[in-house]
Image (tube, rainbow, N blue to C red; front, side, top):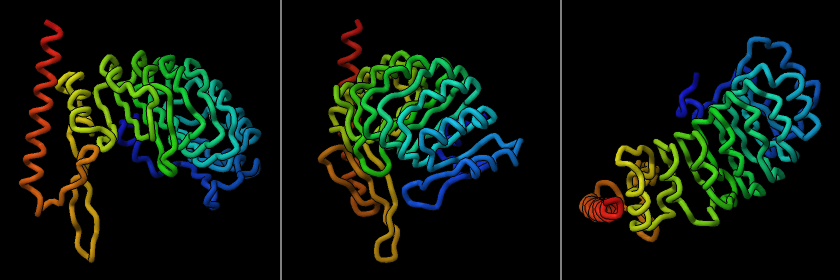
Length: 273
């Protein structure tokens, strides 16, 4: 059984049918049939499927896998054949630009983890709440930064305990609704929130919440002129600090955020008295 972190970082597969073309290519039935040579395989990555070859793969081979990664399948239009996979546990999708809706996830009673990236025409995640075993949900954009959805409210009534959103926009702007969910770990791009917005959001959750949303910065290391530099990217409109030269400013920033957070928590506590 994979952990959420292992699923997120999965790079090796028992069968890898990733096509060489940058756009994902076009896979043939003959190549799909090579799957039969590996009867013990439990994970696969596959690209270049159109609707016909997708349905062929689902009908003939997909039921043998626990993990399926659909990578750059630009001509897929309908994911409902996935309803034929009651035993699938992990599904990851990247770059399916024609998909406009999810499938009936109630038909996947063992699905534990779902990752969907770069579905620019998918505007609603309604139906997520019907996935009975879903623990891990990861949504957003890798390439184009264009993925927008109407609302995160379907997550609230789901069993999801890990949730990540790295898309362009949630149209109703309501992230606070997630505080009413089963989420224990939350990853969001904090640079899209002001300090006040992030403090208000974080205060709505229990103090034992985990994830990248729990600190008001994103730390990364870059190479510049042969040297490695660590940067702290801050909340919206706050820019960044450089580790080693802006440490005191960074400390003051953290103190200021902590004060905001404590103020928001006190405000919430008064509401519940």
